[in-house]
Length: 213
Image (cartoon, rainbow, N blue to C red; front, side, top):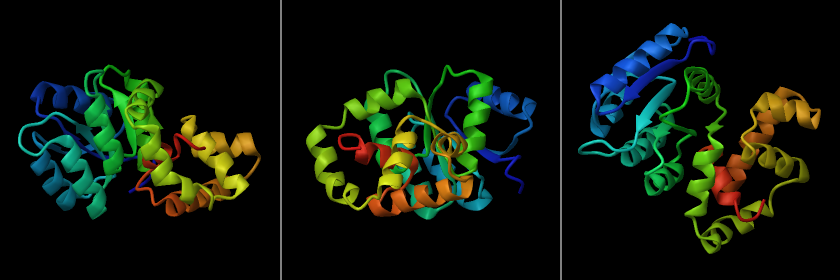
């Protein structure tokens, strides 16, 4: 599958929302390969269909979006892009720790959503600053330092610069341009940062480093 045509699974318990998302993505050349109305079905369909990205609602009956995210990421079935609302802060924190690759508000426009899907499918991340600030504010500084301080000491200066770019929500290409290094080198540094921090995703690395980087 070409990186230019990500395969997407929609997970939301509202049929009208899934239909709207499907139309939006179809109209922008993305391929929706399946849907799920609850978290358990999302996990099963992700394992069976192997999409590039799961667009995940957090509030669903039965298995919620946080649990589904954790299971999908742990199994390596897909990257997860969370669609959230302003009243789901605690769920966002849980999804962040579960390894979601990105977070967007449900009110985001079509162009931003499509860009986010493409970036997440390409192994990057998409963090709406409004969501990220609220989620990180929920994580006590003491927990951030305890979890991340030792690992952060392992990062090289260049890896810290790349991490700072990730915290600012920049894409790999933007980090590459800013630091004057190749895209391949940025990807290598990102992989190293995730490995050294023990992070499941870019957003998880940002959470770990929030009080230190």
